[in-house]
Length: 411
Image (cartoon, rainbow, N blue to C red; front, side, top):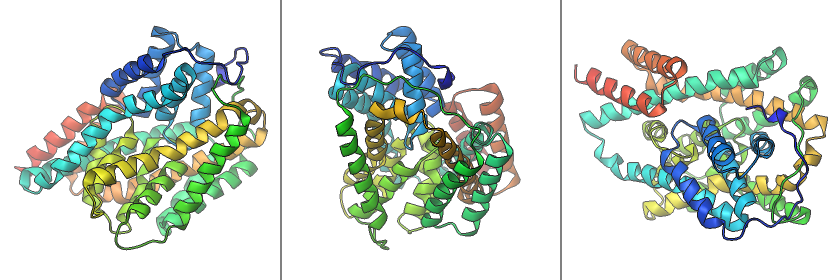
């Protein structure tokens, strides 16, 4: 749906949510957490059908406004939208209930995959892992094409995306990625003045404008801490939290973009090997719920010297927290922000930079690690055709790539 079509009468900030709504919020989002396959874009459709059409918790205008602010901010858009719906419906308890119910099933499944990973060392296990890497090739290629069409549809934004691709490919450090995102915003303010932001009439949330400053301060404090944690060869709980917080704070454009950010935080530091990293990303396509639940697998795999569950918990909390803090800081003032012309231009430039960032990650490591022979290219091409034209669930893509990898591995 088009967020720009939203309208509606203003809602008072601080309007009390329905009493006792947290329980129904939890059950409604648990249903989605157990069944919402297909990635972030599909999740938005599920939520619209469930909360606008079926339950009538929101009208179309309010849903479109919430969707617009979640797409404007960095972070996991579908999880932020669920958190916002829970907040509007059930206050703080409703927001927490929505997050836990929507995220917990996929977190448990991804942590379970981490527990099974040591059993995947044999010939069959290697074929399965390679199939999951082919899943990453298919899904990232599909996401890259869709994002390029949506976020780089004109010459100025294509230029920004191409420049970022070249910059990151030539000097692919974590700081280069941060600089590329910032550069995209600067160039967007200069080149993308024709982009407009959808209007907003405000939201009914259980706090006021003063609290926004507190949430923004917490976000910035966390980001400063994450950026200043010293790099080390041996992973530490603080270093792990910093890597995932940076990723969660800077993921513009969708869940796929977390891939290059986490690659630099976990793979380039030597904490995880590329094979494990891409296998986890491929497995994340096979579970319902938010893609950021990949953090449970990666956090459980990083050797911290602590129980794997501790690493998983640190990673999950750190990757989701910044997006939620920014959302809370923005909701009551979104109507005011949406009137500033520069906001849409800056975000347009950042989103174009994200396309270049994801293109660089698709080339290395997704393509270089996943496609080892012509048969791999054929398997990935057929999977991409199935996903793009047949529009089948990504779960079937996982089954196809893994089955094809096993079959070709035994020939």
